[in-house]
Image (cartoon, rainbow, N blue to C red; front, side):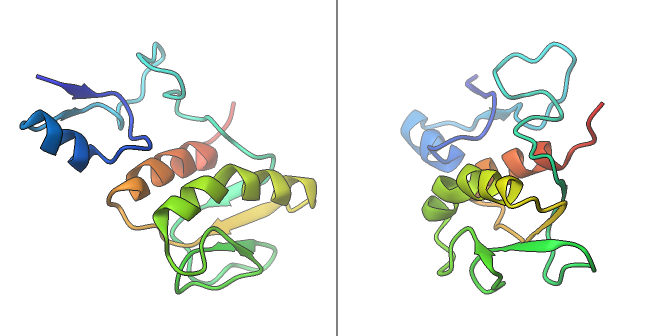
Length: 129
């Protein structure tokens, strides 16, 4: 049975369609011995704290918007997941360079490339040791 180690640039649904079968989804597994790069619980983390699925930031947070959730910093104004994926690390690096200390991220759909984006964001928001 094919196993998806972590969501990426090709949506899992597209892989399943080509393979003609479902995938075992391992991308949510967290382990001290990851089986693929980027599978540690904290990975791709900016210096700023990150809070997810936010439509209105708390005082002191800077909002990273997506689609209908508008902000000064945007992943994609028109809700395009491909554009958001391409902009994700650029925006996080820009926000770091601007000295932002707390980042609130707008909700990203849990489908297609949104799965990969949310995986990276969850790792960016994970507690760091």
